[in-house]
Amino acid sequence: MAQTDGKTPVLVRGDPGVVSPMAPKKTSIMEVWRTLWIESDAMRAPNNMNPADGIFVGQPGCLACEDPDTTTPTPPTITALYNLLQVANIEVQLLPAQYNVNVTPPLLQKAFQHNIEPQTAAGDGYLQADYPGRDVDSVERFWVIRMLGAYEGGVAEDNDPDVADVAPPALGYAPQSTKTTYLFDETIRDYRDMLAGSQSYVVPIGAALDLASAHEALHRFVGNHVRPIPTPPGPADEGIMQNAFVIFTTSAQFTLTDAQIRSVQRLRNPK
Ligand SMILES: [Zn+2]
Image (tube, rainbow, N blue to C red):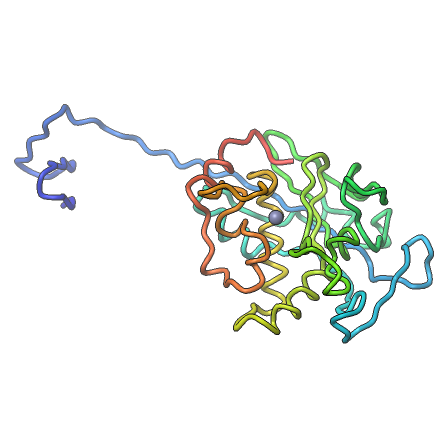
């Protein structure tokens, strides 16, 4: 039996004696699912011995210093992204190893870059051109987002030292002019440790990296943040797209909004 509001007749096939106010319509439902492949790559560890890496100034344990949370960037994970995109009928999978050949150094042509500078700065230029090492492009019938576990973004947004930058730092970049989506390992670790001093709860570092990974990948669908944030916020600034909330909000508290579902489903293919 169907549930009703007591006023609207609902005709369910097989219910005897029910008269519909309209001619009954048969509805065929076909669910269409798409697969989104994630090409997940990572830089190698920071290397003080290679001048081409830029100046590396790791000072572990010092929150007010440069690079207090150094570690080797790891390939971005897809757990939160998988869960979020189910409601939009998107199945998220890692690009299989036989297609994702350039995963980590030495196969990545460019192994480490200290600061990935924003487009507006006179920097390394990697936000103007794809970071080397992409294997599979995204096309209409084969959706691929290329993600790179990187070290940190521009010097004005890397949270080093903590007091130096205008908050919030960049936990990643998804520059719409290129096809590489960055996840900044050191900045996420650093910012999470900083917030742990003022917030009652921060997620474990693995969850922070995973949530930030989902946030950055979703930029490929919802576009850039809008500043100042409109009222009410648009799809690029609500839910998991609220900047830096990924550090202290659990994955269970995030879901795609209606506008974000539309943003995901309207694309020919993400870049
Ligand atoms: Zn963002």
